[in-house]
Image 1 (tube, rainbow, N blue to C red):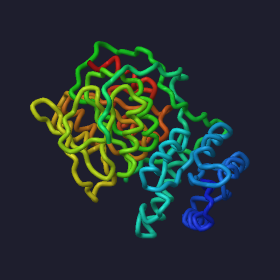
Image 2 (image 1 turned 45 degrees about the horizontal axis):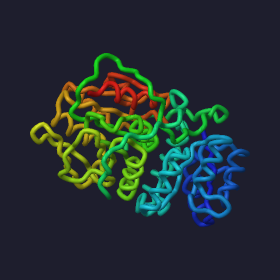
Image 3 (image 1 turned 180 degrees about the vertical axis):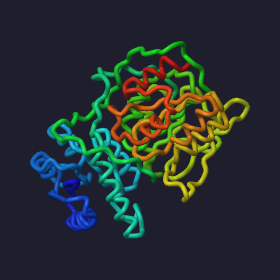
Image 4 (image 1 turned 60 degrees about the vertical axis):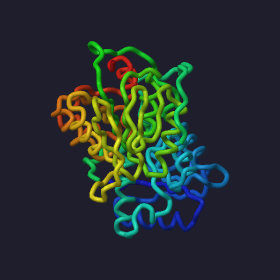
Length: 381
């Protein structure tokens, strides 16, 4: 099946270059181009493309406003193009919260220096995004978040499973609201003590992590480590954003830092994060990214280190994301006696990573996105 794409960008050179790369595959057809966000919204409604590529800085209407309008009128998977800068990261995170599925650097040299590799990455990303669920529907409509409890200020600062069928455009759900999920008790038996709670995710992860972590109380009893596939320039802004929204503290992990209850440490982009056991307390090791690994940071690396450092004492969670990163790490954790939860298909933007874990028989529980935070709050002691 040919995937239809709408290209929205105010640069004529970029529109032409992207169109040439995508159409050369034979699997993708560019059905329209727009020079600003307003044109993009109108063409999205008229053409109903399978995927929309979107710039963020444009005249008449910017990319984020355009994404919000598209999600209200006729939701479609949106792939953002942005700069790999701190400000670019903040804008991209806003776009993801507005309903965009994924992002890529607008400077093609930052994706790949070799033209054939660039073409492969762009085409694969568009095809994967085409099978996503933009603004995957939460398990229940979220109410307004309660005021956060007081807490201490935080310190300053590719293998892919088979692609799902392209969803029916007429039944797309609307984009999620940036509010805390409904607080409800779903305890299944007595609460259990874990030395570490580890969460791994990729595509759709920034919004999913936000929804999960916003449901945790300031006094959450376990340390949390987060692995999100994200460039090095994006993770500081993402940690800052989460810290402002959540009751627990969230910050980017630093080498040598000790894990603490009620604090979530985000693996820095472009590097690998491992956890050591120092007298029963977790200690972070940040290592250079290995070019032999597809992902930096890699969920398998962090989860594998936890299987060795805290056997039988870790809870691993795999959220939405393309590919299968995390499956082998979960297997090692499971073999050591630890517990594994994964996100369900209905609420995943892309059911790749959690599907790989579930199909391998590694998931102790499969949960809807908005059930994961309350389940953690009730089930971890």
